Length: 624
Image (cartoon, rainbow, N blue to C red; front, side):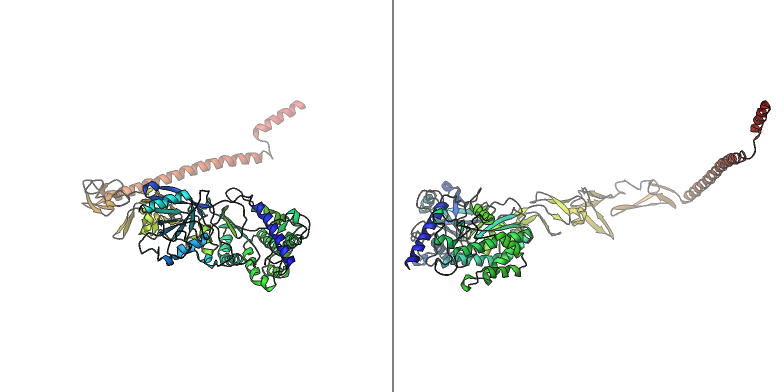
């Protein structure tokens, strides 16, 4: 018993040395904004720190009024004991309960406020200092209520809290808007997030909550990852053993690679069960499962492995072993040889590159603080605050997408309210064509002219949207006038806009009226013409048996037209005959010349022509 106490004391000294090193790191307080809209002397925007419990409304806002209780002002007891209730009546503003810091856990105050009916809790600091993060209580004692806290919480400074109390004491109604819309960065259409966890399943409620979260969130995480909406990375915390204790029994049992990578004893008892080094090796294996799966373009297999390992290889059943882990790996079809190579030799006195990278990743960079506690969720390089719950975490992930790029799961009724359902969100709509400019988003809604069947609508999105470009007339006739009468249809839609067709006049959008060509004397105006207006056109006839020629807007005799027609045909016929004779004469002339030249060339090869004979005889005579 004495040796166990001495060993425990030694390990406490080791942990104290580790914690001393952690205190030199950087912790970042995650904040949201609190805007006071009344009374006038308090109007403005103030910072408040998000608590590590409850459900912050990431990406959203909440409006209410502040109440400060006359009794139980530290909210360490149930408000039922004081016959105080803050349950909102239908149509009433939600209550944000302001309480004082001290005497009990922050989470206990939130639980009592929630039971009393408060929609949120504001804790006023009791001393002037920079904002801190309200953390979960220690695991000792009854903390079952932690899992049931659903209201958001915020810590405010002492000076701001004093001003709120003073205004309430005067009888002022303090209206407040809690705003989490900028609590997480949302730069683009993909969210990067990390989950710092542990393979240990014997560390109490924290271990239980981690594995419960992994099991419940697995489906959503895998869908988001497979479709490219997220990029997920799991991480594991390890510590190093201080050099002075490397050769101690405690460090040897809790660490691998000669004290470089350590984890606490799972049961906090060195005499039984598994050692910390067993946890480190299993953590390393889980990292390597992710790395190998990612190399094979299937990083989501990590979720399957971790959940299956927790079910098949629990510590309490003595199955937390390499053999059990390899059985899970083989059942998922992951390359176990590549995983063994990634793990390396835990007994080697050298750095393990995978665990060294994990330790380096623990150090905060940019807007993210150091990771020192488990579990920790980091979204877009900001540490998540609040309950480790599927719905709450999914809301936080959805808040990390640039507006209008969120996946469909972020727009479900369980996650947010569709603001386009009421009054179309105040945006433009064409009810006849069932087209709207209202686009529901996780943060609210945007009024943006849509693209329908490849046709782009342009406008301000609030009062006006109009189809443009090719194909616009296929969508509700481009928003232009169109009508059908007596079996004839006319449309004012063109690729360039709305323009009344020939035979009509008007703006082309709302109306086009028939032009009476007869009355306005724009057609059928010859002396013998008889004009009759029709819808979109006109009919013109001629008196005295004459024939109307529309292109010339004139009447001519039918006989004259016939004679003129035959005369024209005869002219054409004789013209064609003359052209044929002339062409034939030219053809015969060219053929005759060609044949003469060919015949002369052939005859010249066999007998001298007249002019050639004379020249030859003369030459012969001179030679004699």
